[in-house]
Length: 162
Ligand code: PNS
Image 1 (cartoon, helix red, strand yellow):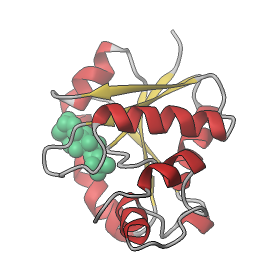
Image 2 (cartoon, rainbow, N blue to C red):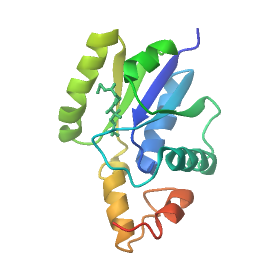
Image 3 (tube, rainbow, N blue to C red):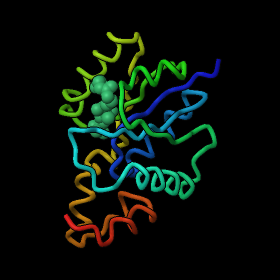
């Protein structure tokens, strides 16, 4: 069976930090699914459909390999989706200790529910401070976010009010 890993998140919008983690995961696993999840505890700037389009455009822009696919999870448990695809692992990126505090219980409950392991990849040094929320804020105040996101995302962020 193909060794599939799932990289889930809100990706509102996808950043170069996410793309770095994704492309590195695609070197470790035979295939990786970027799973854009509806997280009811967040009020997204971009709809799920927009986030999918931005992710696909960004993957094309950076010349990502063909073993990366994009899909969505509108409801239900991540691990049920992962099990239905026979996924080997869940991928998460981390930048700081507070990311680990947030991610640790999720990885533990996901493993407890399903046996599926979460594999953590450390952010590339240059992207250690890059987050979707920071990028949205900088863009909404007229700042240049071209170092942190693809052109497609930078364009989509233009005109989005905070
Ligand atoms: O980018 P985010 O919003 O921090 O990602 C969190 C996300 C969407 C990966 C997480 O909330 C999730 O896995 N949601 C799916 C529902 C689920 O399985 N919840 C229980 C385990 S956390």
